[in-house]
Image 1 (cartoon, rainbow, N blue to C red):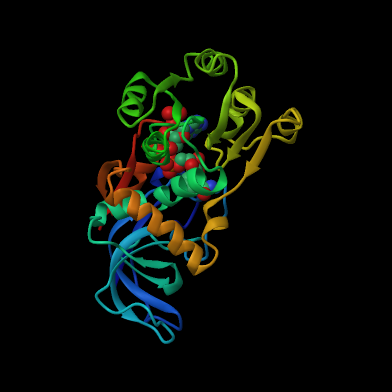
Image 2: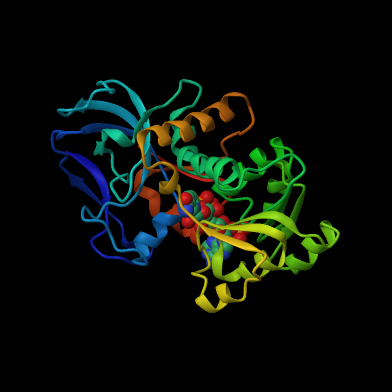
Length: 322
Ligand SMILES: NC(=O)c1ccc[n+]([C@@H]2O[C@H](COP(=O)([O-])OP(=O)(O)OC[C@H]3O[C@@H](n4cnc5c(N)ncnc54)[C@H](OP(=O)(O)O)[C@@H]3O)[C@@H](O)[C@H]2O)c1
């Protein structure tokens, strides 16, 4: 027996129930993992609230770090004792132990601690595909990242700055603006108090930015499209404030381009996953990206992490210690 946070119903941060669960022996292509740290992602709050249907196990969470306890048949490249990290949709991470498809597990390099792995892996892979694959940021580009002090946002700021971009970020408070600046953001705009589009026009001498990375959605879409230079690209990768409507999309000028994408588009094959993961690990190893570990809480207090994420109090990335 081990413990897990189970959701018998959707609801608020108090909907989790801390329970004994049994974890079976691994089947074909699976490993059994004894987890040491679990990552929290904004996406998890959407499952808990029922915006996205709960997975069959009623245990949410896509990301964690742990030690392989047992391997099932047909698992070739992992062995008991390996320390691995993973992103594995759509379920199962908020638990002390779990079964995991071996194809999702990647050995965690020794230069990353368990906490860094759980805080940074999903968000770091996201920063990697946004900056290095969806729109390849070049020296001299001007980029806009919303929620710049969040888990993904802080890594995007650091990495884009290292690539030679001018980084403009939006955040909801002056404290978050200061943190974003310390992580490579050249211009941090408090979008709850200032007209972001106007500020960006002033910063870019009216030209606009080459790319916007927007995970806020409904509330930022108008400012995002208004801030694009001609032939600029808006990359939509989330909707923390709600989904963008068809009416909003129809107003986008024809010489501004919108891409809607997600991490799984870049990790569909094992080869693509390893390419993306190794580039992220290398960026951490050479100091380009420092993983912004925020608060570390016990796994059973995941509800508190959700509350702080949803009420926009958090910065960096939560870790749930097991
Ligand atoms: N598609 C993908 O591949 C992918 C992968 C990872 C993450 N994501 C998305 O990227 C975003 C960042 O993820 P994260 O886990 O690192 O979270 P996060 O950025 O640490 O937290 C979300 C942030 O969104 C901002 N926000 C704006 N409006 C909000 C609202 N109405 N309610 C709550 N927050 C709001 C807040 O920053 P301010 O207070 O500064 O506004 C908040 O801190 C999320 O939208 C997530 O779903 C997408």
